[in-house]
Length: 400
Image 1: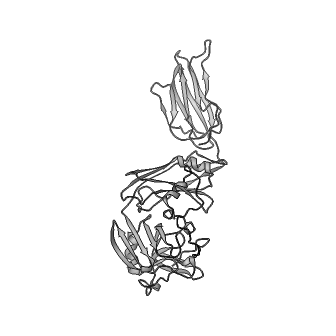
Image 2: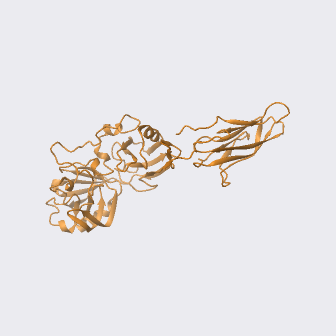
């Protein structure tokens, strides 16, 4: 949080002679500026009690608060706004029966930039057992700011689940934190995410836009397993194989067209989709498309590769199925389902999009926390092997 620039409590009233004995103290002090909107705000009366009191914004809206049982103090219990002047009004009455006005103003800080933060999983959203929790910060954070933010980000699970935060590179100029369990989630795990980021100082005059929270439950266990030389995929649900489908993987003459080996994660699905992979094809209509990485890999129907499905790998990186099989698999796929591909020449890595979390071994993952050492230079546990095809420098368009 930002250090709050304020006068350390300021009083009025009291004194000697025949004046009123009640003394009013404000926190932050009267006239304070650049107050963090999450800082404690209260008015306290000594040698008396509060008769009436209100804290209002320039529109006259009263801020909610709690009165002490003995009416000696009134404490605000909601966050304030940025760049707003607030006004205390009211009256205190001393033990001598004489009134003292409650009258003060202070102004909250005005950020140079307000930083939105988004979460990838909404309340009640059904998700698969490999889903990571992703907080996307719309600004670049330094190491100190990442550490402060991470302290304010909590994940609570039932049953208890070992896991942790990792800060992964963000190609869009922001910052990105992922929380992942050590192993796949147990089906039925209840998850609560809370991030108290409103009012947090992100440096350079940038402050958090809002707090975030989400509650969701992990769904059934469904894993797609594909060994490329077999030209088949199996859909394993709760330990039993429910589908065994002929397919064709990507095994092209360019690394960009090779289906990546590693644990992919389902992120989207589309009944109809226009796919492009220049210079090979542009705007081709495909059906029953389940996205498994941001590098253009999908599991989808492709009648054009029907003759190869089950016997040859000919695609440009996607996993092709027949229309009937793709339609059968499509409704079973959930955001966060793992798709485990093995037997190809290029591993899944950071070059392949946002979610490559399961390519990182657990010991390395822990080093990517802002609170547990500096991020490791290598963030993939499966780098391209020496002498093997290199991963593309940037993700291609959706492939077939």
